[in-house]
Amino acid sequence: MGAAISIDYITHHYPGQEAPTLKDIQVTVAPGETVALIGQSGCGKSTLLHMLAGLLLPSEGCVRINGHQVIKPSPRWNMMFQKPSLYPWMTVRKNASLGLIFQGRKTDMRERIDQLLETVGLSEKAEVNVQSLSGGQQQRVALARSLATDPELLLLDEPFSALDAFTRVALQDEVTRLARERGISVVFVTHDIEEAVAMADRVLVMGSNPGTITAELPIDIAHPRDRNSQAFVDRKAELMGYFGATRTLAADKGSAEAEAPTPDTESEQDESSSSESRARVRAA
Amino acid sequence: MNREATLSVDTATVERLMPVLRFADQARRALQYPALGIAGLFALWYWGGWAIGNNEDTMAFASFAPGPTLAAFWDIVSSGAVWSPIESSLYRVGWGLAYAIAIGVPLGVMIGYFLTLKQVTHVPFQFLRMISPLAWMPVAVLAFATWDAAIIFLIAIAAVWPITYATAHGVQRIDPMWLKVGNNLGANPYHTLRYIVMPAIAQDVFAGIRLAVGVAWIVLVPAEYLGVTSGLGYAINDARDTLEYDKLAAFVLVIGIIGYMLDAICVRLIKRSSYHAEG
Image (cartoon, rainbow over all chains, first blue to last red):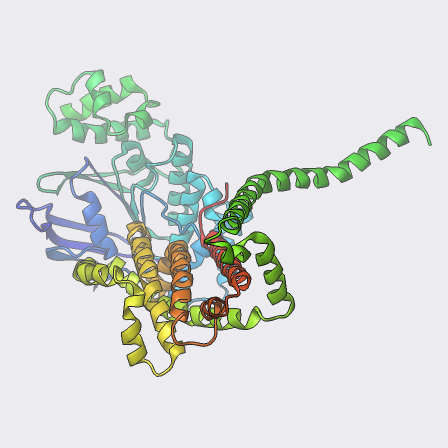
């Protein structure tokens, strides 16, 4: 079952920095919900995610998962990073098994891992050294590794940003499907607007200096989501509008594209409808 | 037999021969340069022997030349006289290295892991490292009850530094993400060491051991010049005292060959412990 998260008034100062990196962050995530944290580089979204994972403690406030304060990492909430960071001296199976080994859950480990590798489409690669895999396959192993311990919460720190466009889209859909099937709560950090709209039930827009949550946008599109549907395109445009709103004079199409944090992924979108609908959002 | 059958037989023969030919070619490629080097060394040795033999002042040492040496080498190998000193020497080097590894690897892991410890230990360790182990000889003789123990101590104190610093270097090169991921998966300190740190640094540790083996093997011979009545160093000293220069040179040959073999074992271990994909 997915975890309920409560982020209570988190403010964080990094040592030696005067301005807080995060200020008064207050968020709740319902069990099984998928929430995207989107914002420009340096807004503290990754810092916040590390706090959810228990890899970093906030200066003030606290994170609670199912009512328990998070003070250290746990196999019940698992984080996936931008790089798969697999251990190059191990096979795919060994990498995926590590969480279970660390927990001492070795009974029926083999079957569990077999199942998981099948889920992520790597059954045939089980006994292969991970160095021979492609970037997408490596990230799939990392996904299997994260899911092996049956986490209630999956934290994703831009895990697909280093992949090519096709693999990225495939993995976005796959993670969303798996998380929904298993009822896992997901919090992910991204600066890819399409990724946020494709995966999230709710998008939190973060602003920087200090890092705060500036807007919240529910994405009420049924799964599986069609990226070319009008609703999808509208949501994307709406989200883009939040970023446009923090800038001045971003009305024409050219600067709308420049605003997209990862322009290459946005290229397939229908530009005219995007700026049109954004204009509509602005007017509203 | 029809024509097609003949053809297929021929192809089959060629195909069966192909691996042999390929192997021969690979062997030639792999061996031609080392063979050249060995031949060069022998030529130099031969020339040296000839020069010594033709000089009135050095004529007494003419049996250092390849001919007498190889004859003496054959003698000590066929009579079995070579094995006992080898055994004594390997015993000392083995224990010396064992202590050096037992001390150097944990020390290196800690120095690599804790920056403070690295800074604290830098001056004293570099100071100790630069002292010739043989300078400790008098201390070692006083401190240890047996000559064997004293020699093992000298080897260990010489071999511990390369192992320590290679290990520390390996630990510093560990990708911080590996530790973070392990932490995130719930690894305790033992798990971190066993599944992440040790495999990550194995290659560096063995590279350090390789350097240590070289140092240990070099320190061994002079250490065995003193006191003991066994080992390769003693055998050399003994041959000198009895003016058996051919035998002396034969033991030098033995030292070189065993040293080479120890190094080759280390190289094999380094390769095996490397996690980098082949090719």
